[in-house]
Amino acid sequence: MSSRGSKKTSKAGNTPTLKKQRNSSRSVDDTPLETHASLVCNGLFSDISFLMDNGTELRAHSCVINSRCPAMIKQGVKKVKAKKGLKEYAIDPESHIDEQSLKVVLTYLYTGNVDFSEKKMNPMLSVHVINAAAKYKIERLIQMLEQYLQQKLDMKNMYALLRKANDWKVPRAKQLCLDFAMDNPTWVQSKDGVTTLGLELFQEVVLLSSQPREGAGDPVSVNAKNTFTSDFKELYDKRNESFDVTFRWADKKKEVLVKAHRALLGGKSAAIASIIEVAPPDKKMGAPVVSHNILANLDRAAFESFLRWVYYGETTMDPLSATKLIMFSAKLKLDGLRKAAEDTICSGISVPTVLSILEVSYKMSGDLGKQLIPRCQDYIVSHLDKVDLQPLNDKAKASKKSKDTTIPLIATDLLLAIQQDIGKRLRLATDEPETKAKKPEPEAQPEAEEVEEEDEPEPEPKEAAEAVGDEVAEQPTVQSSEEVVEAAASSSKSKEKEQPEGEEPEEPEDEEPAQGEDSNESPASPTGKATGRSPRANGKSPREEDEGKDGVAEAGQSSSSRKLKKQKKKEEKHAKKLARKQSESKGPSPRRVSKKAVAKK
Image 1 (tube, rainbow, N blue to C red):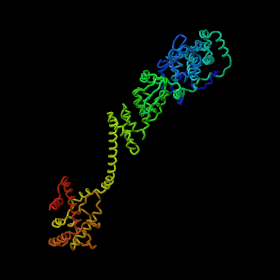
Image 2: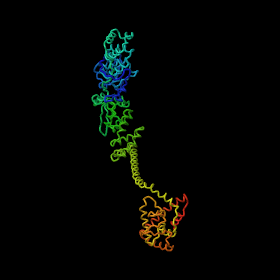
Image 3: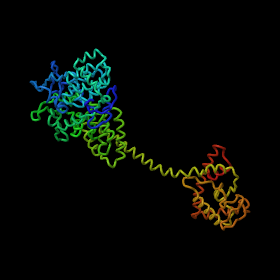
Image 4: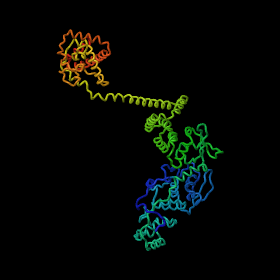
C-alpha cells in the first residue's frame, strides 16, 4: 500500500483541473483571480537569481520567495558572489533540479496554480517536479503532481517513469508506479519494459507482486492547505520590514507615506513600473520615493485598498474608496481593480456616499455611468432631508476658478430632478379631489333623461312664461300672490337640495310631480289640500293672470324672489345648451324657440 495517506476523491483517467479545485471549496486561502503570473522568471525589479548547472539563470524576487518558500534560499542552494543589487544562488547539481522543473515550482509560488496542459506538462516532467517540490517541502504542489501522474500512468510509460523515480530517489513517484504494476500483472510480458527496468529493479517488482495485496492503491487527493492568499496577506501586513519603495503625497494638506514592494506593483501595471523606475532614491527612507500627481485624488484608505488588491486580490473596499479608485484604475489600465470598484459602487449607494458616486458617474465612460446617474439622483430626491448638499455647493464654487464644468452640470441636473419630483407630487395632490368629485357623474346621467323628455307636450301660458318664467307658469292655480311666491320658493329650495355639485340643473317642465302622482292630477296647494284643477282649467281670465303677475312683481323684493331669479338664469342657460344640442341632431323644437324668445325678452 502507498504511504501517501490520501483520500479517495476522483476516478483514474480524469485529468484534474485547478478551476474545479478552486470552485469546489473557496476559502480565505484559495487562489484569487488576481495573481502574479507576470513576474515569473521576469527580471523586472528582481533582486535574486537561481543559477543552473548548465549556466542558465532564472530571476526571482526575494519578497515572494521568502514569503512562499524560504527553503529555496535557506536549503539546497549555495550562495555565490553577488552582483550589484542582485543575489545569486547556484542550484546543487546532485539535487536533480533542472531548469524546466524549477520554472514549474516558481510558477506555483507566484500563482498558486500549475498548468497541466499537454504543452506545459507530461508524466516525465511531473516526476522531476515532484522531486524538486520534495526538496523544497512544498506539500500541496507534491500532491497536485502525484494526482496528475497517477491519472497518466499506462503500460507504455510505466517502465521509464519507475526507473527515473528509482534512480533520482523520488519515493512517492516510485510508489505510484509500483502500485500501477501490481494492479496490472501483464507488465512482465513486455520484453522492452523489462530491459528498461534493469535486473535489480525487475526483481524488486516481482517480489512485491508475489506478496498478497488487498485492492488497488488509493486515488491521490489534494488536501494540503492552499496558503497562497494567506502568504501574500502576511507579506502585505509586514511590508514595512522588507519594503523597497515608498509612495509620498499630500492629502488635505497632510503628508501621507505608504511603503510597498515595487515588483508586485510593477507587475500589475506597466505605467506604475515606469513611474517607479524614475523615482529618485532617498537615503533616509532607504528606498526610492514616488511623488506623482496620479496620487493626488487618493487618500490613505483608497491607496491601501489598492495595495490589498495588488498583494492578495482583495476586492472588498469602502464605497468612498471605490469612487476614488475608478479614475485611478482607468489611468493605470487596471481592469480588475476597476471592475471591483464598480461592483462596490453599484451596491454601495447610501446617504454618506451618494454624492461621491454621482460625481464619479459623470466621469465614467460606458453604460455603467449612464445607469448610475439616474439611480443616484432618485436616491437623493427620496432622501433629500438626510443628504447634505453643502459639499456639492462648495465644489461648485471652487469649480468657477478651475473652470471645471462637471460640478455645475451635476448641480443643474440634480436641481431639475428635484423640481420634477415636486411637480409630480403637486399634480397628484390636485388630481385626487377632482377624481373623487367626478365619481357620481356616470350614475346621474341627467342629459340623457332630459333629451328623452323633450318631445312631451308642454303647457303654453305664454304671457305668464314671459313674465315669470317656466317655473311659475307650471305652478298650479293658487288663490293669491303670496301663495305663488311661497310655492315657488319651496320648489326652488327642494331643487337646490336635490341638485348635486358639478351638475347642471334639470328643466322644471320635465320634473315629475312632487307627490309621486300622475301629471294629470292636481298637486297639493300650499295649505296642504288638493285643488282638483289643472293649469288649463283654472277658470281665470288673462286679466286675472296679469293681476297675479303684478303680485309676483311686488313680492320680488323678498329673498324668495331673488332665489327665483337666480334659478331662472340657470334654467335659461341650461335651455340654451339643450337647444344647441337639439339643433345639431333633430333641429329646433317649439319649446326651445320659446325659451330663446323668453331669454331675449
